[in-house]
Amino acid sequence: MFIESLSLTNFRSYKEETFVFSNGINILTGANAQGKTNMAEAMFYLCTGYSPRATRDKQLIKSGEDVARIVGKAKSNVGNVSVEAVLTASGEKEVKVNGAKVAKMGDIFGNINSVFFNPQELKLVQESPEDRRRFMNISLSQMSKKYFYALCRYNKILAQRNNLLKNPDRLMIKETLPVWDTQLCQEAAKIFSARNDFISRLAPVAKKIHSEISGGEVLKISPENSIKGTESEIADIMYNALADSVDKDLKLGFTNVGPHREDIKFVLNGTDVRHYGSQGQQRTVALSLKLAEVEIFKEAFGEYPVLILDDVLSELDRKRQRTLIKKVQGIQTVLTATHVESSLLRGVDHVRFNIENGKIIKRTEKVTDK
Ligand SMILES: Nc1ncnc2c1ncn2[C@@H]1O[C@H](COP(=O)(O)OP(=O)(O)O)[C@@H](O)[C@H]1O
Ligand SMILES: [Mg+2]
Image (cartoon, rainbow, N blue to C red; front, side, top):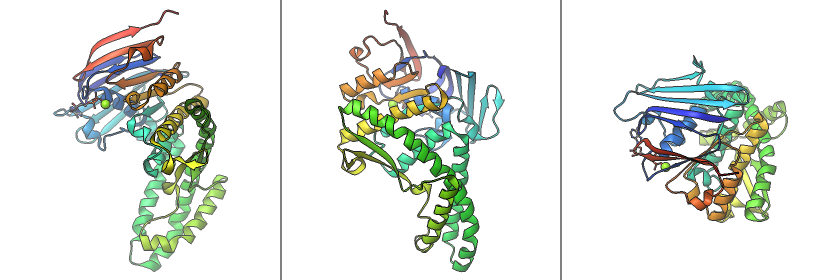
């Protein structure tokens, strides 16, 4: 899959600009604050409806403007697809796929698949469990709308359950909980089951990549605080776990078991990398994980997703930079950097965009003689 063009209107620092990409490596360079990350953000937004950094869509609209528009045209195994997102300052947003307005925001998923990687994601291993859950949620939502909607329903029921737990009327709570819990467990089972499957597919691929990069370290990835089994088994186990934890839940005023407490465990040569790994090891694990994610998309859809690498080169040493460039050959990649050493790209076809103040000031195509 690849994005042929991306047009931005009043998106962040861009007034009006169109990027025409190659299906290989695309490099955006420019000094700080010129609009490189803004472009990467627009691209990811079009794929998922999420911004990796904005908390509110309004921040995405160019200051002083009322409407921002992102339009992407992509090609995949199944044909051409165009996705358009329009954001207004009043908070409305509209998404069109091939010209037709989608009914639900979740329908933005699965049109253009992407894997996003930035310096924050490089910290995926040492940061909080919430970051690792977000990693799974975004990846799995792109792979399955069923997952996305289960997650939405789960979060909604969970919030209602947590509200109920704070109610002083204990008797009423104990009578009402079973109704909520049955529904909560149904959604939790779908989430746990999809994540278990995802991690079991990701683990061997990440292990192989990690071993290559690190020169033989053995990486083990497994779910933590998960429940295993068929969906109906998971729902039953979770229901009992909720019952066991009810006194604790009442005391603390929130729910202590469920997918919202899940984590991913990374073990390197017997040691938990989250807590005891060196920063270098943690970064290599994160890199291996993201590159494995790309492969899992390929397995699931028969083609690679679009890979967005925002400012990650500067965080990696030379050897890891080389590995990354080697691994992304054959995958449409959009890479941003303040500077890329030309020796890193020796023999690598690429298109380069120089960005200044929200404009492409130069586009160069470098095709290596074969
Ligand atoms: N909503 C907005 N309207 C106008 N300019 C914005 C908006 N959001 C961010 N910017 C500007 O975009 C620039 C940062 O762009 P960014 O893509 O993050 O830079 P970099 O090239 O370093 O990745 C800053 O100058 C910032 O002021
Ligand atoms: Mg940036």
